[in-house]
View 1 (cartoon, rainbow, N blue to C red):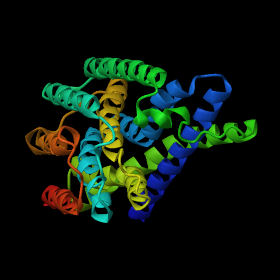
View 2 (spheres, one colour):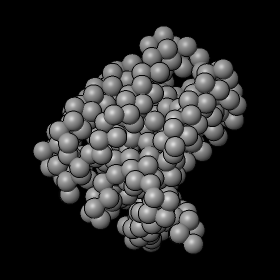
View 3 (cartoon, rainbow, N blue to C red):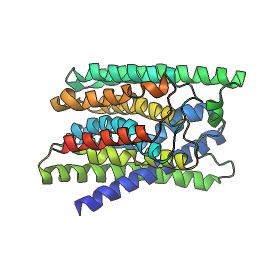
View 4 (cartoon, one colour):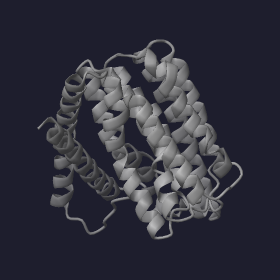
Length: 317
């Protein structure tokens, strides 16, 4: 039953996160908040809400391994699995959007995260540093987006005009219902998943960090995987790398930043010895596609997916 509760908690989290995004986006647009700001802030935070709630809940319940393992494992899965599986379906062209600046920011964020991790604990000091870095990146992204919109020369910023989940005809009661479902479902799902994951770790005698790196991380990466697979099937996967880069930055800076200001999270030494470097190595693997505009074809799909399977097997053994 513990596995059933874990899946149920994950399902509640994903559905509640989607409901919260829809409600918050449409409420913000109705209140007159510009669509650009909604896309860069509310949508970005909303889609990371399940991971955020898991990390906060895990930190509060004294299982920081699940919180940190979830973020590190999700970032690794985002590169190796979320990009690898769609590449098995079709070639993803990466030459249409310039993601170099965001990529440099992600690498800088990853290095900052690693440096703070070697302090041995993510406390409120680490949290404030990570959130300050996030604020700088968001401010820079907003400035760039405004410039691109004014010049009308960036095809990758077209989706900023219509934020995810926007529906001009959505009635007020439905917006309220989405918000209510999101606000109730997120903590409920997080509590269920963290408790179940902790029980599974105890059942198999493995550290909670391992469960965070595998079961929880894979589960919270499923929405990104589903999105990129569908985009690949529709031949619209050209900006998948940009989405992965953005998701990874938010995981490191926003999720750990917020969670560590709420409760201190000691860092498992095994994360420092192996997993954190795998995460950084996976990010470095993006260099040919981001800097040299190489296409992500089936060969790379096999390589990336194979590396992820190998990594999971190593973690579990």
